[in-house]
Length: 320
Image (cartoon, rainbow, N blue to C red; front, side, top):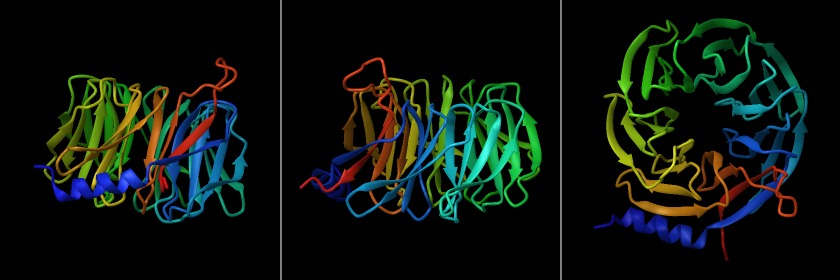
C-alpha cells in the first residue's frame, strides 16, 4: 500500500518536471549549491571559475562569474545563515570566501594541499576543508585563520558536522563513518556503514537523519541520535557519488554513473520520481524551500563531443 503522501508527491512531479539548463562554464561542473535563502545557485568548475545564478519564479539568470582560483574548483558551500557568503575549495591549495553582493573575494586562505571537499559548520563559525592527502583543516570564519588540523591515515571522502554542531563526521575509503567530538576532535564512534568505499554524507535540515552513499551502490539513511541505520535505497547500480535531502526531509535524491537521478521518499523508500540524464552525475542539491533539484553531469558539447558542455540543470519547474 503506497502512502497518500507518496501519491501526492508523484502527482505534483507529474505537473512539475521541467528542466532548465544553464551553460555557464567552459569545462565540467564539479559542485552546485543553493544559498540559504534559495535566491542564488552557485556552481564550481574544472575551468577554475565559480558562477552565481539568481532564481526567479520560473527561471535562472546568470549574475556573476568569480575568477581567481588557479586550479579546478572542486567543491563549494554557502554560509548557513548569511545568504551572500560562499566558500570554495580548489586544487590550487587555497580556500576562497566570496561575497555575492559585492562580487568580490573576501579572503584567500592558503592551505597545505590540493583541496577537494569543503563544508561550513551549522553555526557558521568554522569552515572545514579536506585535501587529497587526507588532511582536514579547520578555518575560523571570523578571522580566516587556521584553528586546527587533523591528518588521517585513511582516504577521507566527505565531511560534515551534525546539525547540533557538536559532532564532526567523515566518510572514508574503508566503508566507515568516523564520528569525532567538536571542537575537541576526539574519535567518539566508528560506524561500519558499507562493505565498499563510503563516498558521500548529508544531514537532513531537521538534523534527525543523515544519509550516506557508497561504492556498493547503496544509500543508507541513519538516525542521527541513535547512530543506527534505519533504511536503505538500492535502485542505483553504480557507486553513489552525491546525495541530497529535500528541505522538508521528506525526499532523498541520489546520483551516480547511472543514467538517472533517483528521488526516493524517506519514510517508505518508494521512488517518487527519476530524472533521466545522458552522462554520470557529479553533484546534486535540493533548493532550501522548494522542490527544485540542481544537478550537473559530465555532459559533452552537442556539436563537439570532445568538449565538456560546462552546464548545470535545475529540475522541478512547472511543465505546463
